[in-house]
Structures are given as C-alpha cells and as structure tokens.
Length: 302
Image (cartoon, rainbow, N blue to C red; front, side, top):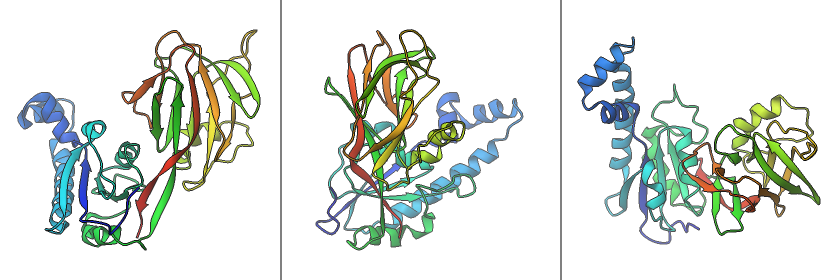
C-alpha cells in the first residue's frame, strides 16, 4: 500500500502505442501507412494529429516531474513484467482502458489519469487535462489528497492462479462454444450450459454489465464504483435435463464468494477487463472463488 510522503517517490508513466505507431510498426514507414490509408479512403493526417496530442501530453508529464524525483516510462505490453514500488505514483496517459490495464498490477498506489484527447475519450478514469500534471503530482504526495477508491474484483483458483480486474471478470469458454460449469452461491448450486458469466464492479457497471442489465428482468441493482459489492450475470443460460437456469444473476457482498467449478475439458478461461490474452486457464474440475478484491484502485481526483 502506498505511503505518500514517506520517501522520494518514483513516477511511473504508463502509455500504450498510438494508432500511428502501431500502423508504422505494421507497415514499416509512414509512406507505406499513407498509401494503405488513402487506398481505403482514409487520411494519415488525422492519426498524425492524434499522435501529436499524445506527444504533447507526454512531454508535459515528463517536464513536470521534480528533478529530485525518480521516473520511468512503461508500455502497456510490459506491465506484467514490471515491479511496482509501494510509493510509486502512476501517471496513465491515454484512454480510460489504460487505467484498467494497470490497476490489476497495483497495491493501492495512487494513479493520475491524463486525457490527451478529451473529444475522443470519456475521461472517467483519465479525468485530468495534461496541463494540470504539475499540480496533480504535488497533490498525489499529500495525505489529504482527494482520492477515489474504486472496488476491484478477484478470482482465486484452487490450483493457485489468481486474477484481478477493475471492470469485470469473464468466466467461460475461450471460443463461442458453450461454457459448462457448476455455480454455487448463497447455499444454492446448479449446473449450467451458457455463454459464460461476468462478475462486474461498479466501474464495470457502465459497460458490459449495463448492456446485460438493460435487457434483463432482474432485481439486481448495479453497484457504484466505490461500493464494496459486485454483480454477476450468466449469459444465455440453456435449460436441459442436465442444466438449470435459476442462478443467473445476483449481488456478491463484501466477504461473500461466488463459486464456479469448470466442466470444460479444454479452453476454459477466466480473463479480466476484456483482455483475452491476460487470462488464467480454467480446466475441468478447477474451482474459481470470485469475490471483492482486497486491493482497490486509488484514483486521484483533486
């Protein structure tokens, strides 16, 4: 857990490659990118403009770091190989999803979200303009800073695997095949064949969970970001002689667990925040216990 003011901090700037950088990596040169886009009725200039705005935000962030502080820059692709320190201040520059990507690797270090394109990104998790980074870094060191603690969700598997997410966890089959499992909740248990299930936090309640909730007759009230509870929804449960459809949604309170035991011979998975590559295997007989995570995202607001 972060201890603001305890020592000289390190600023970890987290970014992801821009669309322009990804296209140049794929095609080799900007000239080839221009040819590729123009042959499809698109323009390179729009991507260059967006890339330039990101570069300005990155420059402002780097220039605002006090000389006596340490700092490093980290690409999203390297998050799983990086060791965060307790007193790190995390600066995420980009879209809201970047904060979700980094949150699962933190232990309540404070996070500053900078939005380089407010006309493009909603800014729920990156609410600040890059021009305020100097004030925000100073605030991040103050014990009295306005910090929003957002609840996360975790799954602990009985084979030792663990996964944490800010928005939601998905449990199911890696492809479009039916997911088969046993679900247990609040003393009831049944066998399912479904399109998988999601367990959502209050942060995720504005996305995937909301789209399910809007189209379902249910008593479940979606949580708010700071609520210490979760909502789960089974997707398209199929009734048969062997499977039931009673335990298809509910609320998991702090201290409660939803238990799911896989009956999938291969390609059963649990992944978080829509990132299928960042998953744990969920093969036959493995049980996942899903609950409110002990750690929270500490998002700097003021």
